[in-house]
Figure: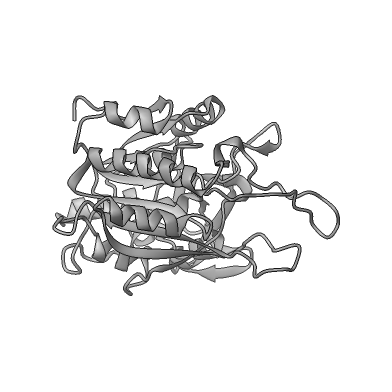
Length: 358
């Protein structure tokens, strides 16, 4: 691992830079490659405003053969650096994901799941000539049919209200305060939501694992990896994206004691109200969602939160704000005396440490 450029963005084409990394050195790869959307004309809303579609040069290929050659090259380079017990995720749409899936299998990867990201707030199909594109597909594959791989089943079950996590993920698209803008315009046309990367990284890697993203963009993979105690490597060829990503990741603070895979018996449950009973948090105190000081909720004496007239648990109110399943322990923050925002899970871990829980 000492030979790896950990926690760095490498500038250049991943097909050229991946061969410079040590073989079998990466635990997990997340790839959000060009989709080859083949956009042939401008898109307009009914009110005649233009849709900010993906028309970047990096998403344009001469034909399907050129796209397949490009895809085969980077997938093969990724497999060389992937550990035999590692895994890869590739996201795409109907434009490219079937071609990607075939090439994954041709190169020796073994598919484990296809996951459907169902967008809670998709962009409408303004022309009314087809169904609204309301989902994207993620392919999760391991190195080979014989490979072992990481899957944090119990952790995902806990994040899903005690139920098995399914392969249909209802999550909103990246918008609002999470969407990075430069001079009022989107910094990247296809920025992915952090909630999506949280699912990928927390489900299929362990703290300390090395996560590689060969199409780094604005750094969502690196930001989430850093927050949850993983090492990361990004590869990106667009200088503007690199600048945005570096600034973004520099501002991320790792959470203390990132979650690890646990069996149902290994970590005694601590309800949120216990923090109030212990005097660690007080009723009427403000909590901040994902460190956003504009998204606040008030603590009630019974351990529920109040947000915009609605009352619920830390998980329920978090789900309301996120538009999908939410582990409130990892997303709500309180303000310390020095003004720093600290994740509430730090208080839960403090109680466990005092009790001698393992």
